[in-house]
Amino acid sequence: MVTAVTNFGRSGLSDWLIQRITALVLLAYMLVLGGIVLFGGEVTYESWRGLFSQTWMRIFTLAAMLSIAAHAWIGLWAVSTDYLTERLMGPKGNVLRLIFQAVVVAALFVYVVWGIQILWG
Amino acid sequence: MLQVSLYRYNPETDEAPYMQDVQVDTGGKDLMVLDVLELLKAQDPTLTYRRSCREGVCGSDGLNMNGKNGLACITPISEVIRGGKLVLRPLPGLPVIRDLVVDMSLFYKQYEKVRPYLINDEPEPAIERLQSPEDRAKLDGLYECILCACCSTACPSFWWNPDRFIGPSGLLQAYRFLADSRDTATESRLAELDDPFSVFRCHGIQNCVSVCPKGLNPTRAIGHIRGMLLKRAS
Image 1 (cartoon, rainbow over the protein chains, first blue to last red):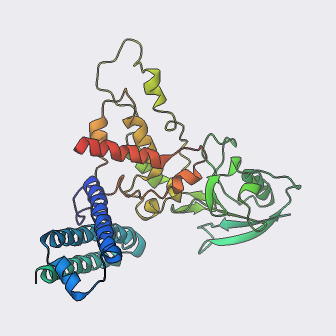
Image 2 (cartoon, rainbow over the protein chains, first blue to last red):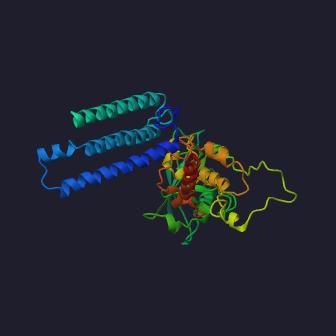
Image 3 (cartoon, helix red, strand yellow):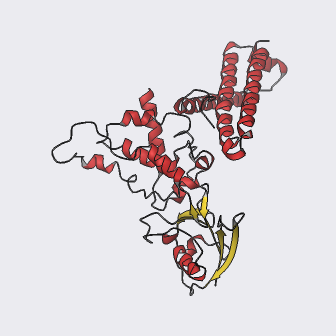
C-alpha cells in the first residue's frame, strides 16, 4: 500500500509549500547566474573561480543545491507513489518504489555533498 | 447512418473487453448521445448503461465520448463526434461492471470521507439556522454538483490513487461545507485533509473544470482549501 511514511515533510501542506519556496530559490538562482553569464563579461576560469570564491555566491549556490534536492525529492516521491504502486504493478510495485526512492535519495545526497566539496574545496 | 464504436464487456461471457463497431440510423438529426444509446439498445437489448432523468440532473449517464467525459443525455452528437465516428467508453479509471457501467464504490468512498453534511455542535435554534444572503452566496458554484463522477474519472491523480486522493468531486463538496457559515467542524475537516494525498495530489491540470457538465470549478475550490490549510498552519 502507498503510504505517506517516506514523504519529505510528513504533511501535504509542508511538502506543497517547500516545493513552491524551493522553486522560487531556483528561479532566483537561475536569473542571477543567467544575468552574470549574459551581462557579466567574458566567462573565463579566473572570473568563474572569483565569482564562486565569494561567500554570498557560495551560500546562494548551497541554497540552490539544497532546494534542488528538496524539490526533486518531493516531485519524484509523488511520481513514484503515482506509478510504482501495488495497485498498478502488483506486489512488485512496492519493492520497485522503495528501490527507486532509495536510489533517488542516495543520488541527491551524493550531489549535495559533492557540490559542497566543489564549492569549498 | 452514424458509425458508433462501443466498449463492450460482459464478464460472464467475455474474457476481455472489446470495441464493437455498429451503425445506427439517426434520421439525419443531431441527437443527444443518450438517444443514440437508446436506439442501439433497441437493436441489441444486451447493451448496458445507466440512465435516469435524461436531462442532466441525476448524473447517472456519465460516459467517455470520443475521449472526453460528459453526460450522454445533454451532449449532442455534433459536440463530440470526430472523423464521422462516435466512440463511447465507460468513465475511465473505475472498474467496469458491464459495458458502459462502472463500479462507483471508490468514488462514493471518497465522497463519504469528506463528511458531506452540515455539522453544528451548537444548540438547535427554535426554527432554523439562519444564514445571511452573503454567506449563502459563498455556496454558489459548489452545491450544484450532481456526483456524476465525470471530473474525478478525468483526473490522472484519481486514476493512480483513487483510494487515497479524494478527487475533484469530493473536494468540491469538502469546500462546500468548509465554506458554509453554519458548519462548526472546520478545524477537524481541515485536519483530515492535511496529508500528502487527500488534497495535495491535485496538480492543477484542470481536466475536472474542462469536463464538468454543470460548469463547476473544482480546481478553484481545491485552491481555497489549500489557502485555508495554509492559514490554519500559519
